[in-house]
Image (cartoon, rainbow, N blue to C red; front, side, top):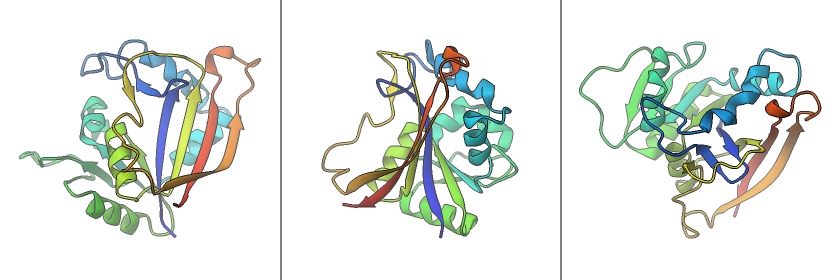
Length: 198
């Protein structure tokens, strides 16, 4: 069965970027601190295993802002998987590689599910994650919680109201932590939640 999984790194106070994120600073001021754990992505330890699992997903859903700030990933996020970009407007220019722009959340989710078969579609970007949560299209959330406080920036769940997510119940199905003694600067807690019928 297909799964749509939000995959986001965040600070302890809920930010996925620092303040003033933009083309010259995609992670905002201080936001680079969130991704020190990715230095371990090629290691056989917990963070390397989590990263490898993310790279084994079969499609990517991204918000338009994330897609643009990431430099379009050069048209290939990983392994040539389909990239579905949720956007309010489809640009005139043809997208690179396997990219497709989609304006409807339900259609985007359906395209992703069809692309992955019994696999997983990964979601990047707070805007896309929020839109899919509102629509009831998120099956799992992989949250990589880094023990830093950013204080300002873009929060993962910023614009969701109680009414929009009253149908969302979460069950913790995996918890993996790195050992802080190995390298305090790369400590992270990997949490996976399954969405349950509310």
